[in-house]
Each structure stands twice: as structure tokens, then as C-alpha cells.
Amino acid sequence: MEFTLLWSALTGVTALYGSLWWMGRRDTSLCVRDLWEIAITAGVVALATGRIVAMVRIGVNPFAHPGELLLVRAGVDTVGATVGAVAATAWLARADLREQLDGLGPAALFGLAGWHGGCLFRDACLGTPSSLPWAWAQPGSDITRHPVELYAAVLMAVAAWLLFRLRLRYPVPGLVAALALAAAGGARLITEPFRPSLFAGPVWWYGAALVGGIAIAVWAAVHPAATDTTDEVPPLL
Amino acid sequence: MRRIVIPLVFAVVAAGCASGGDVGDVPLLPEISPVELQELLTDAERPVVVNVWASWCIPCRSEAPLLRAAHESFGSQVDFIGLNVRDAQGPARAFLNEFALDRFAHFFDPSGAAQGSLGAGGVPLTLFYAPGGDLVELHYGVIDDRALALNLDEIVRRGS
Image 1: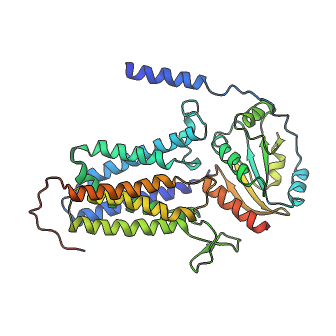
Image 2: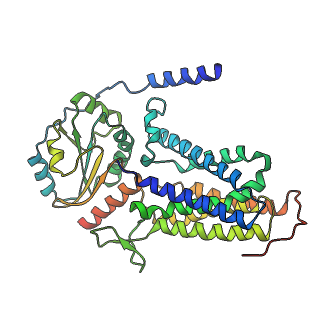
Image 3: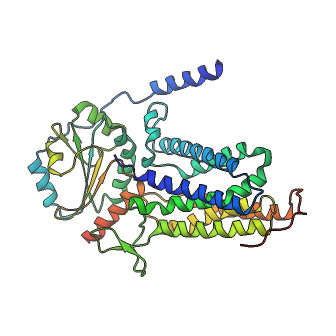
């Protein structure tokens, strides 16, 4: 049995919690405990829905083979996981949706960056061949390849950092969450051509996240919800 | 009560609709000895993927559709070999029929001796060989889309 995927999951969860803790120290309006519970629950729901959809897509009946739900290594469908995560988050944060989503957005991106960066623990970073100076090869091979998972990790971490700063500077409810969605889709869209796969990845889905996120961000900026903006805006970090 | 009963009934009905073990047109799997398997690998002029599986192995079910897709994509460049271990002919043939995996060669290894000659135990197991039988990658456990595509690309490039 291989448990290297658990290391990636642990890296992602640590990045998520670390970023929430760090953001909570710089922005006292964030309720870190609530956001942590929402994020972890949404993550578990995403894993379950993504795995169920992946099983159905390859023709395995989840009711007839429930044990296979635990075989996360065999594949988790991105679309199913995203829908599950968004639905769970929307339900759990319904009392204060925009504010909580804005708090979760950058942290979720950090968590995803940690998940992708966790490829280092399971020797699963490489993608299509490349002769770029930072490309490296599999053990015993002289075919150097793009470290595609690290590209995704870096893009998402940078986006998370920028969005956290944006949230402090322009606290428009819903704006940061929408841009986080766009950033997640954009990072996957950019890196998809470097990712080895037997199937064409759900590029349309990443594109939809990018376009939809930007559209919602514009809408949020144009139609800000009633919010108390009399507080002093915290300084940029 | 209704909230519990309806999903339960649905689950039981769905489970009842599962495959009943039909072997279809899948022929008996030829038995292979350790020596024959090694000869097959060393004589190969193309890259080879060996997947070690069993019908009773739950993770093997999950990776079977991936292997079928991999064969469809790389079958013209790579030889695929299935090695059925510690199994019986009936369930093994039903497994191949269920997942339409009989499009490439599968061999029967009821004692696991041929698998032993590969130098690794357990199922599932996927081995990637360059032409001539040089082992490039040994993947323990269920394989995912990324690892399968990456290692197929690796052995195709090494073989060209």
C-alpha cells in the first residue's frame, strides 16, 4: 500500500490552517475557527463527491462497490469535487456568505498550493518534456520535464498572497472570493498543457471558473453589499 | 424512517444490478511460466507495460478503465500485458469482459510464480519496460491517470 497521497493532503491542510492562522492574526474580523471548520468540511465533501463522480464516469457503481470510495488514489473528478466544495461552503457559510467566502478564498488557494506542492513528497511533480533550465528528470532518466505541479503551487500561492492584500485594501464583499475562484481556474488552465494525462483535462471547467470568477468579481465591485466601511482600513503588509 | 428506508432500498436495488460474472466471449487465459514471461520481456522490440491484477482485488477494478484507455491511446506504440495472479479462470474472464480489457494479451499465473520472477509482490502492480526488457518504473498499488500517462510517455521516448 502506498500512503504518499496522505503527505500531499497533509501539506495542503497544513498550508490551509497556517494561512488561516496567519490571516487571523492580521485581520481580527476573521473568525479563524469557523472558517477552518467550513474549509475542512467542504474539503471532505469535495473528496467524496469527486470520488463518486469519478467512479460513475468510469462505469463503477458506487452502491455496488462502496469500498472503492476510499480509493482516492484511483482518481477524483475535478468538476464533482468543485461542485461539492462550493455547495458545502455555500450551505455552511450561508449566514454571512460573502464575508466568509472572502476570508476562505485566499486560504483555500494556499491550501491548494500546498496540495500541489506536496507532489515533492510523492515524486509526482513532473509533466511534459522540457529543456528549460529548471526542468528535471525522473530517477534513472535523462528526459527532463516541466515540474508542472510546482508551477500550479507557485501560481496559487502568489494569487493567494495578492488576494489577501486586496481584501485588506478593498474590503468589497464577494470580490476576493470571486477572484480566488478565477485564480484557481486560471492556474489550472495555464498549467494544463504541461500535465500528462490520458484524457483531455476539464479545460472548459477551468475556463468557466476563470470567466465566471471575473464576472462575479465585476458584479460584486459594481453592486457592493451594504457594509460598514467606516472602520479604518488596515495598512498593507 | 422514510429518509433511511428509501436510500437503503435504492442501494440494495443498485447492488443487485451489479455485474453477475458473465465471461462473454473472453477465451481461457493461457498459463505462463516465469521463464516464458522473462523471454517475452527480453525479446520485446517495443516498450512493454505489465499490469499484475486479480479479479478479487478491489483497487484493480478502479484502474481497469484507465488501462483500457491507455491501451486505446498507446496500443500502437506499446505492448500491454496483463498478468492475472492467484485467481480462477471464471472470475478472471468475467473481470476482463466487464471492463472490456480483453483487447490486449492476458496470462494466467495461479501460483504467482511468474509474478515472483518480476521481483515484486502484491496487486495491483504496474511495470514499465523499455524495449529489450529494461525495467524503467515499478508502480506499486493502484495507478492514477497522471502516473500512467507519464510513464507511458517515458518508455515510448526511451524506445524511440
